[in-house]
Length: 99
Image 1 (tube, rainbow, N blue to C red):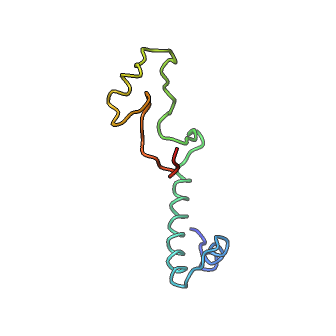
Image 2: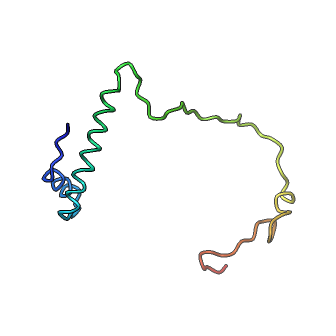
Image 3: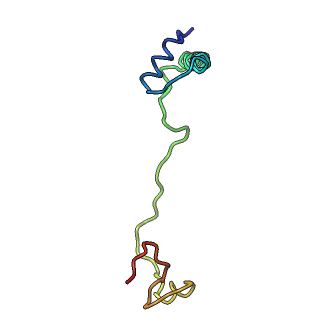
């Protein structure tokens, strides 16, 4: 059905800047031929009245209302911190800079 030849595979290798051995060319020729045949089968089944989709189920973002709610106090936020100083989280330096 398709016309994938070793020469075409070599040409694709050149375009992709991939060096292919003769064994790889032979193997890829068969694989690409099978892929093209399968795509052709899917194309035969696809009908024009089916709407194209990018995802099998509809996706939409679900956002909560952006309203101010009860906030935690600084003490509540810091009560479980492993280390704190001056009302802030204290973390290990990661950039190697001393202050």
